Amino acid sequence: MNKITQTLIRYEWKAFIRNKFQLLMLAVTFVFGLYAIYYGQSEINAQRQTIEAVTTLEQEEFSQYKASFTEEMKSLEQEQTHDIASRPAYAWYRHGYHAILPPHDYAPLAIGQRDLFRYYYRLTGMSLHYQLFENELANPVNLMAGNFDLSFVLIYLFPLLIIAFCYGLFSAEKEMVRFPCYKYSP
Image (tube, rainbow, N blue to C red; front, side, top):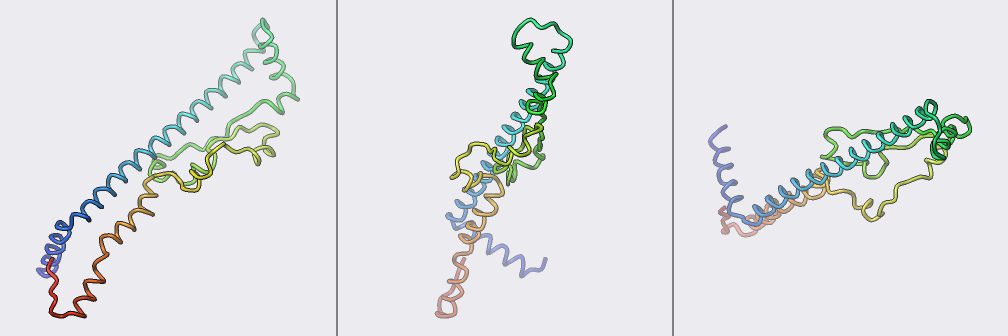
């Protein structure tokens, strides 16, 4: 690195450190970024717990169906379970599997469309038609604003930070051209 570049970097660094507003904005953006990572991680952990619960529920349901063929029917509930498992008409409507989209390891950084679209579907013989009309209940205002994840910070807040850092560049140059006696000192 040549001497002129080092001098420019040194003076720009001094000007940056002296501006308390820019330091505050940088610190606030950094805190927002940390919170966004935490929020994304908590959302993805909640989705992973839901996927685990759905998978466990599916396994328990099918183990009950299997057990209904080997055990003696002692209660009305066991007889209903056996009827559901053994009749093809019931199986068409009731037997279900879950199509699951597990989250990627980097999903907490950018939740993206995971908050808009479901990450699991219960599929049965008739559910292809019904799943077109089935949605999770969600607040439309929250869906419109989106989640506070790291991609939100980088896309919306970081450009505002850049504008705040560079707000005086153009006006300082214009003043130097208009008033040559004015000397800018960092």
